Length: 437
Image (cartoon, rainbow, N blue to C red; front, side, top):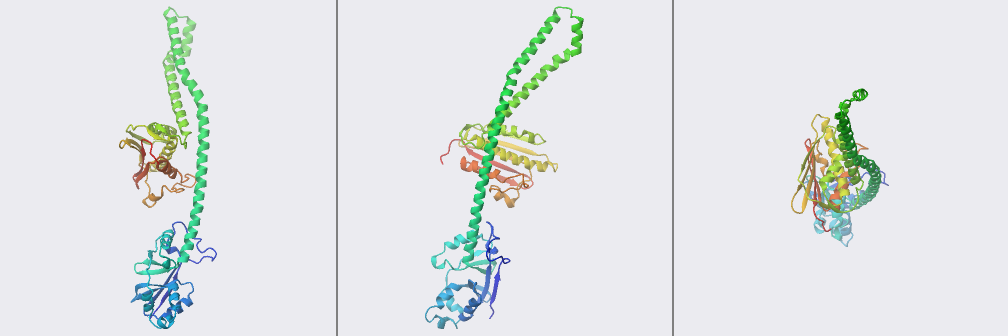
């Protein structure tokens, strides 16, 4: 008859901080597990001696022919052995007799089970089983025991970590909101300062073109009267009058187009300055997409192909300032993605698609042919502070905030599909009319 007694644990830490190494994703195999296999033929007094020699042992695993039979906890053994005549009945008999008399339901979890999940299920057990040890399956057919007290201490530590993380997330989001608010106020002021001189240029372009045309007609009228003075003829040659007459209208037209472009940029900046506002109204989302593209034009004109497939969607009841922030986040991410493939000699392409799904919903898709998102992290991209970008280039809040704006604020859907090596597509689905919360 042999007894296998072993304590399976991580490297010992100082007693004051026994769970300091744990994280939110920690699993049962990171805790101290006990392995004590006892044949069911072992006498009760021998099992009592095992517990006396190992005061931290929560229980023993009973086996027969090296196969699992059940679990007998220290608590149950002491409870039954303390009764009248129990010592005489069970101390010299095989432990199997006591086990079958005191048999209880066993809760078993795989070793990769999250600590928080195991703790929650453990607390849902009946009151008489609440303090029984947890059976942990390490490998197929191999079991260890976990003291429920240690499990609850670990769960408490993880709860504290969660509280700290939520506090940090709240603080970071408040900082990000304040940053966007300050940026919006600054942009609004800059847009206002631009608007006046741009309007002045636009308003005077017609006058300039009309005045130039009037002066040309005046010169032609003088020439029609007859002989032109020699001094005037020489002056025309010095000024290259024929060239000026042909080139000046082109210059004026270029200035007009530049002024009109500045007007659009000022309008886009004005819309950008309202990011984060909660004012809801019927809005043409394609116009806001174009305004966002105009702001990002400096990054797009570096060899990125932009394909647009607009389905002329109807106006959508939304907070356009908030959706501007979503467009900015998703388009910036798409640009970052295609810039990576551009360095590999592949043509960078971003595709925008809008369409009306039915009478209640519209869809906006922003797709890129970048490197894609690894499958191992696809389920985490909407988490706060999760980013794959180098330090200093990403806050990890862009997609999380976008998800909150689309799903929580607008009762819509934000999903994505990504194939590593081929690209990523984000789809926003938004209700056309107001949705009751």
